[in-house]
Image (cartoon, rainbow, N blue to C red):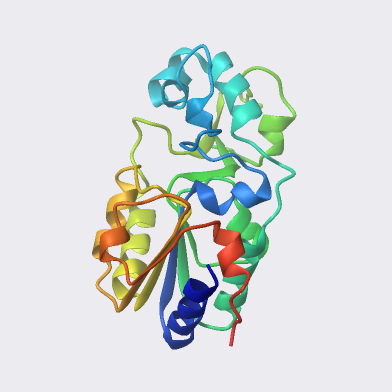
Length: 241
């Protein structure tokens, strides 16, 4: 990895508008499991496949079972930003990082201090009553049993995008705009298997495309640099200047 990190350092040094596009692999070093690896969420055994449980139809038809799974497998309140999150904050503070586009719902980029974050699939830290529209924090989910309810009696739904739901159009517009204007795009910790999010990197027409991921991705062939390994391990070696 050492030689490749040197090349990454050179790319970042020259970059003026860097955008970071990340997936579940960015947060594994914070203790949050990913989805598709051998030990990932989708390779574990449940009464229903995770893709089914995390769908809008399942949420509305079996809310008790949805929230049981959601609390146990999707919320990690004790997780903290790792080396990758912290380095991205440093890059933003230095004026080199223009934005973060993330598929993660864990909120760790914002916890690290980054402000320019496009959360494509929402966040566990925002929840909304389906009846009156009142907003709630994570405590409303964590400190309740069964189906969490608002004072008005309505169901409190996490502001995360479930299978069968559309991404927020304003988030899409912002993310695609930043990617299209970037001169460096770092794609990290994602298999690029989830659509439509994975297709957003097609808006990139800049100078350098970097892929950091343990496994092969569909973007490898067009990348300037491919680093096989953990995101935090690679990013923490970068010197921000």
